Image (cartoon, rainbow, N blue to C red; front, side, top):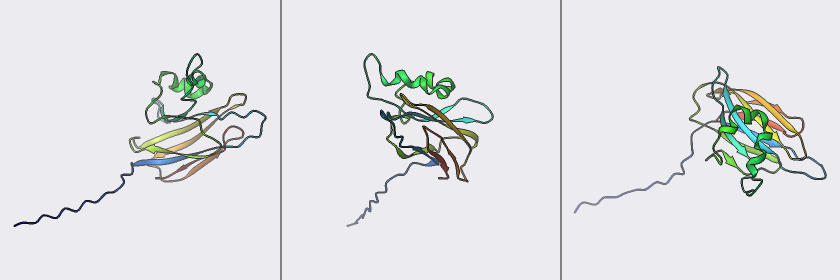
Length: 159
C-alpha cells in the first residue's frame, strides 16, 4: 500500500506594488469642518493619459445631489481625465478620509518610466490644493512635498 502525504501551506498573497504614496490630511480648526475630496493620479512625463490611483469622495451620497456632483471641484484632476472616469471606479473610488496619514499603493502594472505624481484636495467651505512630485518607476528613492492648507505631507516610498 502506497501512502501519499500532502502538505498544504497557506500564505497570504501580497499584491505586487511599484511603490507607496502617503497622503496626510491635516486637522484644520474651523467652525464647520468637512473632510476633503482627494484625487491621486500619475501622468507620464513624456505625455500620455493620466491614470487615477485613488479618488476619495462621498460615495454613499445619492439623490438629487450625489457625491459625484462636487468631483469637478478637483479641477485639475477633472480636466485630466476625471470627467471621463466611470464611477465608482473599482479599486480607485473610496470614501473620504479623516485627518491623518493614508497609504496608497502604486500598482505594479504601472510601466517603468518617468511620471509626475499629483495629489489634489478640495473641501466644502474650504480651499483647494494641488501638490506634484516627480516619480520614477521602478521607485528607488523616497520623495516628499508638503501642502500649506488642505494637504499635509505627501511622500513617495519605494516598495
